Length: 383
Image (cartoon, rainbow, N blue to C red; front, top):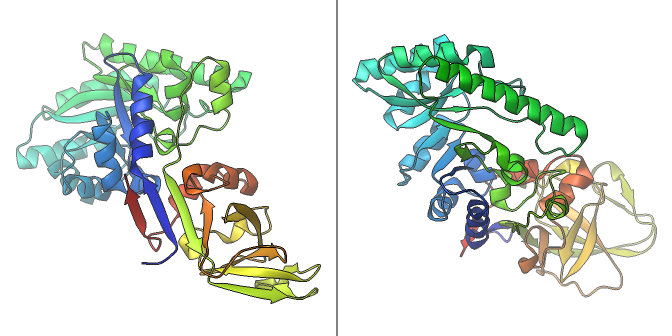
């Protein structure tokens, strides 16, 4: 196995999911996001642990993701958050995936497949766009489309959901926008009930709202990044503590590699493509067998990103290459060839930076860092 690998701490995932569950009122369901290969952590192992820890539903983004879970023994409802093509709908029905629907064409596509195979009461959720600007019907259309779902004779309205766009913000404007979305969602639910139809499981709370807005929990919450140990932008650990909300999340993934070579560079010598970094004095450079094809992206170059070796942080120097990168050790160090080098992750593994730290340095979000770790990096599961 490569020395470049992602260590996945399933006990931390179990801890996070159980901790989230413990903050919910009795009877509120939890739909844990397993989409995007469980945010890069590995869908099947993470799905099994999430269910063991209390997940009632799992959220996926593609039909293929759902098939992978079903063929590996996952039996809980799988909420298909994104749209699939007409060609994929037969498989979505065959494997019992629960789609979001929101317009006549899409509703009738699912109804047609169900009729063709003799399935009745196939569960769907109605997506309502309250301000995300993505998929969903308008709140005032919710009653109409709920009626259309019921009138197909083969579909059942099992739930109604929306998605917050700014719930991870704490500014006055962000709070106001989220409140407005919540009011729009309430309007949609009322419109469905006015038709004499049960809206099913109502849900709108993503990770940030799950932690910060219990008033919006309805029947189910949909935690994502928090299951994998990261807080949500301004809805941070400190912010939650200030509101007397204590939850200790633990990062689940550590990415590590090893020092494959140590080179001595004299003052004036350059490192990497483009000669973008030049040694200002004599120094040692460690070469690591990890690069942008692994998810250690080129844009991390010259941004203050570091690597931890033997409990010490060393800065990345020069441009990160496809398969390798270089870090500066200086001359007063005890680093040896083949020593472990930790890119980011769990403190128990000796990591001094998290995916959040790298995201803050490089202008992105921890989701992208975690999802970016490629399939070339083997996942090692520990419990």
